[in-house]
Structure formats: C-alpha cells, structure tokens
Image (cartoon, rainbow, N blue to C red; front, side, top):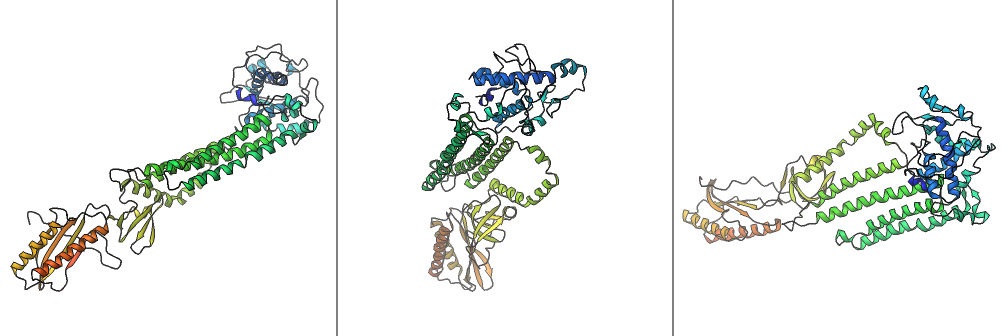
Amino acid sequence: MLRGLLLLWVLVPGSAAGLASEPDRPGATDAPSPLRAADTSSPRDTLRTFLDDFRASVEAWRSDNGDDELRALARARDTIDFSEVPSLGRETTTVIDMALLREVLDRVELPASGDIPGDDEVDADDRLTRWVIPNTKLEIVKIADGPRAGEFLFSKETVAGLHEYYALAKDVPYQPDALVGIYADVASSPGVWVPRRFRESLPAWATAVVAGKGVWQWIALAILTLVFVPLIPLLIRTGLRWDDRHRSRSPWLRFGTPAALVLAVGLASLYRTIAEKVIGLLELPMELVGYMVLAIQAVGIAWLVFVLSNRLADAIGGLGGKDESRPLVDAALTRILFRLVSLVFIVLVAIAAADTIGIPLAPVIAGLGVGGLAIALAVRPTLENVIGGLTLFADRPVRVGDYCRYGDEYGTVEQIGLRSTRIRTLEQSLVTVPNSEFSQLHLDNFTARPSRLLQTELQIRNDTTPEQIRLLLAKLNTLLAAHAKVIPDSSYARFAGYRGSAKTIEVFAYLRCEDDRAFLDAREAILLGIEEAVRDTGAGFAAPLPHETAGGAAPASGSSKPRKPRRPPTDDD
C-alpha cells in the first residue's frame, strides 16, 4: 500500500502516531506534532524530515495502517524535488526513488546533527544554497524560484542518479537501525488494492524476485496481457463491421466505431489500473505499460474525435432546407470545418501525450527558427489552396453538382475539397483544379440561373410581304405566350430589320427550366413551332439559316461559344 496512497499526498498532514526515532542519526526527533508539514527550512531539517517520515510510512505500511502511511509518506515526498519526473507513472516512480534514497542513506555514515547546516547557518549566510552529504553525490539545494522557492530539497540531479548510486552502494554494509531490504520489499509487493499479507501467503518460489519483481507479478502481468490486449483489436473490428453494415443508413446509427473506441480506451485504462493497483508494477515494467496504454489512449481519442467530426458533418450536412434539392447546410463545408476542428483536438491530444511522458515542447517550438521559416515556405502553396477552398465555401459561387463555366472551360462540379476542386468536363474527363487558381477564375454558374434564355434570329426571304410578316409575328407571339415553360411577359417576336437579301425577325424568351434537359425539350418544341408558323404563313427562310442562341446551356463539345444575348425591349424602343 506504500505506493498507491501517493494519489492523496496533497491531504493536510494528520496523525502520525508511533513515529520511530533514530537516536544515533540526524533524523532523531521528539514526538513531532501530528499536524506538521514537511520541514524543509534547512539541509538539517530536510534530511531529518525524510529519515523520520519515510521510516514512519514504512512502519505504517507494514502494519496496514493506511492513514498514517499516507501522511508520513507525503511529508517524506515533500523533501525531494520531483519536478522533472514525468507525470506518467509519477506515483510509483516517486516511491521507488524514495526507497532507493533511503537504501543509500542507510549505508552512509551521516555527520552529526550539529555538523549539518541548520536554520541559524541558513539565516547567517545567504550564500548557503547547497549542501552535499559527505562522501556521496547526494545534495540538498535551495530552490530558487517557483511555488517552493526558498525550501531546501534533495536536488533533481540527485533524483536522476539514484539508481546509479544504489548500484554502487548496494554491497556496502547497512548502518545501525537501517530499513534493511526496503527497496526489494517495496518493488515486489502487491498494489494498494491487495492486502500486504497476500504476498506473505504465497509460496517461496512465487515471491522470489526476478528482474526486480516477484515471480507472481510476472505471471499475473502475462495473464492480464493475454486477456486484455486481444480484446482491443476485436472491439475495433466489431465496430467497423457494424458501421459497414449500416453505411447506407443515418450517421446516427453508425455508432459501432465510436463505441468500440470508447471501450478500447476504457479497457486500456483498466489494464493500467490493474497492473498498478493490483499487481503492483513499478519502474521499467510499469513505464512500459504506461507508454503502451498512453499510445492506445492517444490514438483512440484522436480516432474517436476524427470519426465523430465526420459523422456530425454528415448528419448536419444532410439537413434539408426550404429547397429540398439543396441542403440547409453545405455538407462539404461542414465536413471540412469539422475536420479542422478535429485536427486541432488531435494536436492538443498529441501535446498532452508528450507532456505526460515528459517531452518538453517549449524548446522544440522555440528551436524551429529558420527551419520553421523553411517549413512555412514549403507549405505556402498548400495554405493558398486551403484559403482558396475556404473562400469558395464562404462565397459559394458554385456547389457540388452545379454546371458551370470556369475560365474558358465548361463542366459539372463533382467535389470541392480543402486543397482542390474536381470538375467533370463535357468530354467526361475529370479535371482537378487547385483552389488557389479556381477561386481566381471567372465562374459562370448555369445551374444557379432562375431561368434560361432562348434567343434566335429568323432570316426570312426578302419577297415576304408585310401582311405575311405581321401574321407570322402574331403566330410567334401566340406560340411563346402559350408555352408552359415561357415566363409570362418575358417573351417577344419582333421584326428587327434587314440583313443582306433577308428580313430579320428576332425571337426572345426566358424559360423556367429545372435543368438542361428540360430546357432542351422546351427549346426544341418552340423551334419546331416556329418552323410550322413560317410554313403556315407562306413565308420561307432565306440563306443563311436562322441563327439561334441557347443561353440556358453551354455549347456541346466542338461547337462555338454562345454569343452575348441582346437586352429585352423596353417601352422606349
């Protein structure tokens, strides 16, 4: 239980009844107050606090007195600078480090209490910021800044070298009143959820220490791994299969992958908890377990954020507006926005994971320098395309499925991505245009037209009489007014003048058509009606044949471009 209770070390120190004194060593003290905090006002007080309180925590642990163990262990911990110990596995690492420090101190002949700088020496000499235990590399230093500024603590350099110091000192005889074998005892004991007497009930071969851990711990870890690790890929595969079976259904019903990822992250956390709290893993095995679990959690959370962002984008993008043919929210835009948000969350997860394992990101960011400038220049085209894509989504000159003219080309928009736009041309080729270029082109969206223009000129023979022309104009205007696709008051047929050896009649109309096919059908019917009207009046076409401008659709492949339509007549004409 000595290790697991570190989770609560921030509690206010309470009763520490039965603190053992060490009369022949600097740790000797007379029944300290049960409410005291760790005394770190001088090297002498720091050393005495660690020796007394670590002994008290061990005795409380061996008697299964968790409250006393907790309070004493927290005070002992507060005498050491653990600021550079990664948060991943910090609970177990700090206990092992304290046991190693005690093992080394129990083999060293410490100076008398009066020979160690105390409060008087610290007050008298402002330059006293460091004291080294004689004949060792163990040092107690004065903290210069931070929340613990002014306190004397075992230095972080001492913490970093404890394993080395123990390896050098482990064959040195113990001093009197030492905690004999405390490191091995702590390293091979079960976790906080298992009573200490469980280890004592095991056969001797099971408690034998191999590579710093009891045989029973290695066996328990192997069983735990064989049970838990295969479950995670099994969950993921099950979730993916569920989503595949429901791919055509609502995004809200494709919850297999998100549920599997949540369970996988939870299983990984449970695996680590059992390894620590039940088996009692410490040091390298626990670090490896921690890294593995952290990797699973980081990947699982990042994947979960990405999947959920896509599902939300699909669900929101599918909401219909007043026009059922057009969604209320642009699906492609929402998908990209959610992906950007998920990317930010993934970066935050990566930063948190790096911080957990003790990777300092500040020096990495500060060290970018010229390299960062080079990276910025390298990604400039990508950034331009992304900005162009966002501009397309914001202005929405075209949408997916729209038929348009871009520059001098025609095609149907198939996809608007973050970096490029894909267009299906009239030749059925798939053209990919970078968004930085596409957003700068002149875009003519034919699909967005509220109506389509039909404009044509009839070249009538020069011998056609005025009566025939009047009759033909009346028939043409009646034809246009009667057609269901012609917008009322938008059409006319007029005698426009002379061209060579022909008389020109101009036909102009706006057609309300949903798509190109409807426009082509309506145009065909009107042109055939014009043919019949010319024949019925006895007039005839002169050379060249009538010229027709279809404003509703782009020309077919290989044909000429449509000329600019004339304006409709006004009352001033």
